[in-house]
Length: 471
Ligand SMILES: Cc1cc2nc3c(=O)[nH]c(=O)nc-3n(C[C@H](O)[C@H](O)[C@H](O)COP(=O)(O)OP(=O)(O)OC[C@H]3O[C@@H](n4cnc5c(N)ncnc54)[C@H](O)[C@@H]3O)c2cc1C
Image (cartoon, rainbow, N blue to C red; front, side, top):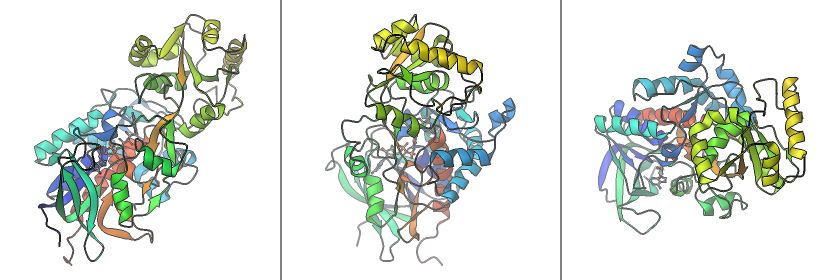
């Protein structure tokens, strides 16, 4: 017999965008709700993210006359995912992303920049960015909404186990209250019952070196991560222990824009992501030549760098650099991005063979002039920019673990599935803790969309879930 410390209708684990979206929807549907978060601060990876969110036919695309479609978004995500994406989940995300963006504006008051970004692998500019260019714009607005709704978000509460009843359904959680990350013995054991359902929204495991090395031994402590420290796998493991199906766990994504000279995500990564890749080129310093289509998906770009065996150099001119002026300024001050008056000065600084970089850039600029598609499949006639306006900026790039595409299996109602593909009663999940949506590779700005869409569904479904025995 479990000694329950308290009961709520819906117990939500994790306070990123997925968990907080679930909490708002569950409360709006009339359930009593508590959110449990293990760290001292709320927000998880969402809080430190760039706040970019992709949605086809979103309000800004309509205002600016950008043509797009759900079918194209679906095709783009599927192509990057190498077709491993679970079609029913992809359908849900692509069909509901734009409506969920509207929900963030209308219900939460989130504001977006008057700008659409087109990241690698997307066929059109469909990513909105929150006003302050950070996912904290979502979590701040959500925390404010939850406070107004009277929902408690409790920090320092680590989920240690999902508790099941004799029929195999989830009836509550074991936690350590007063937990101090990462000390597993800190805090006191408590049991919180869930009358209706538990929603697992514990995010990814990019910072969990032990767990990610089990999936891919190459991703040991020698490889950095862009994630917050608490992006560890306890929540996922708790679900696996009660029979949840693991999906795509070893598809761990590395960020090709990660700066080799900076810890964590940093500012220079943002410069590379928003400026170097969209407007510049990536060069192997040993050969002075380009190595990849700079607009390809993250996996393709990361693999191209890793294949060289050393950091490669991202290069952009002053025109392209102006897109990310704020991160450029900080990165120049910190020495993570360097400025050069000529390509030959830049080539010398990175020990490139004499004359090779200049030849590479000349060839690239000529091909843009002719509107060619290059040998890497980059359609240079479609918005590629000449590298011609000094100063030229350079950054050393070496991938870091950024996103864990795998997780536990769910269905279109966000119910957690077991190995027989049956829903585990009273257990829902949303966000990066789930697997199957992105397949082999996630496109930029698609995670927040997916977490938001499925977080809302999980909350709605959890609140509609009937207690055991209530026929
Ligand atoms: C630097 C960076 C930039 C990014 N930028 C973008 C972007 O612009 N656009 C985009 O689409 N995606 C972006 N991503 C990815 C995206 O931010 C994440 O995939 C998304 O925020 C995950 O949301 P979530 O709610 O699933 O998890 P999170 O936001 O990570 O929240 C999970 C929470 O659960 C808590 N938790 C974990 N285990 C437990 C436990 N056992 N008990 C209690 N609590 C627990 C964690 O501490 C955390 O607070 C970025 C990621 C990073 C790291």
